[in-house]
Image 1 (tube, rainbow, N blue to C red):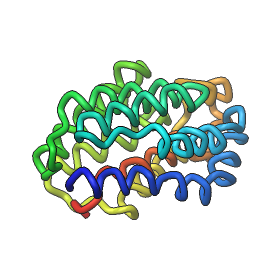
Image 2: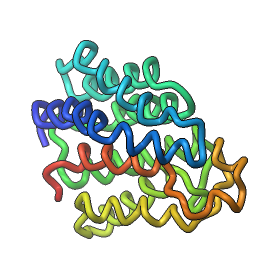
Image 3: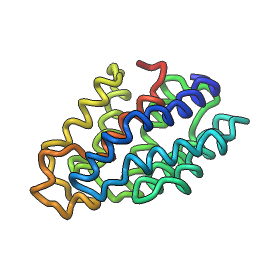
Image 4: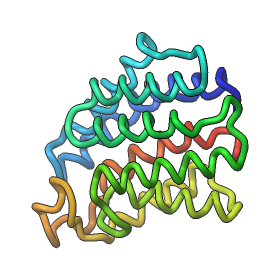
Amino acid sequence: MNINTTKQHLLELENTFKEQEDTLTELDRAIGDGDHGVNMLRGFENLKDKVDDSSMKNLFKSTGMTLMSNIGGASGPLYGFSFVKMAEVVSDDIDHDNLVTLLETFTEAIAKRGKVELNEKTMYDVVARTFEAVKADEKVNLERLQSFADETIDMVATKGRASYYKEASKGYMDPGAQSMVYVLNALIGDER
């Protein structure tokens, strides 16, 4: 995936989050503070004015910095930090091997910054499973990404604001897991 396609996919996330804002807000209202949809939209709305497409590295870095400064709550630092870390390993043209490296970096960044592991009902559950699937050469499309997010419904949250709900968090999808579906779908792009 070249820089123009990657940039287009990232900028298209503004429309995705416009469409999904209410859904993400409802998910977050159930087990959080109800602002995830607004926050994700704000982050990607600001991207078109701040994106630097002079290189793939700068594209990822400027995306990360924009998300960090425009998305509130825990998601801003998590997504922002991850894109900045991915900027360090991204190739000028993202092929399968580079995608694996990017997803590994994304997974490690979320784990490190969020101090999370699998099955704690967070966005990490989606990114870690996506990394393993792509690394194993499995087909990962929007439907598969969604299945990873759906798995969080039966989990009990042990991290973040949702953890305050303990057992009552079971039965609800993690909003960060759902937003991660859209972000990863943009990144995976032509690998589908």
